[in-house]
Image (cartoon, rainbow, N blue to C red; front, side):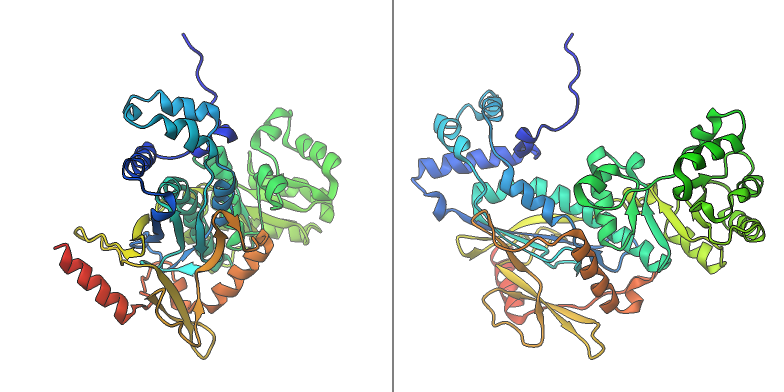
Length: 459
């Protein structure tokens, strides 16, 4: 019996973090070009990443994940191990040996990339990334790009909804243990930070990304000791004014009375169960009456934007919220319909028209207009060769040229500041939790005409 694999992705195998059909298509492209004496530079495709519709109760989405995509495009390679793995696959028996002997060992993504800035807002049918390059290269990148962008975007967008409600309250991302993998936990921390969260429980997100990590204690720490107060004494003796004490293991209010002896020498107390509104009111009263008026109250326990809204509407004296499961899984609607579609091949526009899945053809740019108050007014989707529109902002920015990075990738604090600027420019109605509003995305006359002509051609 062979032992099970560890399950961790070796960085050397990163290029195989993809769907198998990307490889079968890619090998077929190679073989076709070889059989027909077509050079790779004459086999150029343009793909766009966009969404067709919003998840439930969303009026906007936040673009996130670009930095991880760039890392993949710069570093993914076929190693001897990955090449031999593919060579042994029965499905590739008719592929010329030069594919394995010459092409894959030298492979490096040579793609041009345009993208929105991370932290920008987008709406259905707007390209958020555009990928151009040899067909094999552009096709192979699809799955990894979708995986990274779809996940970080859905979490950033969920975090934005929570931030809209919580406003100036401290928000901490606590979702690692409920995220769908350890790596997803890091990505959730990153995406939520972009959308205004203050910190995370994830330690890798701190050491690798610079997002401040923090934590308190688990109920097990308290249960280890013969009585609750002993656990508090031990913790406070070690951590002093950094102590955040969990007070709901047995009797929340009695614990609040017991820790009052520390006065303002501890940082906060945390409540993780029960009626958070009632407990926080009683705890605040106890703390204030016993010289602990500077001690903060942190609340957790399956929080989301709706629960936080109720807590704040009832004026519960909670200073900080730890949000985990609901955020890291975007529990109310955990997916977005992000797609990656061919829109041009060798300068010829391409279209997909099956049923309700129309794809606007051609190489495009998206322009954003603002009203007199500086708020988003409308976006216009246009063909790239149409004249740029005055008094507007082109949202797709050149990022890579033939695989070389040509734009600065800002650090997370700059991305968060950019998000903060954008959220202020989003009209208030689009921030509502339950009401759906349609942001105006116009299609240029020339793009409409091209779409109609190609649709008629293929129907």
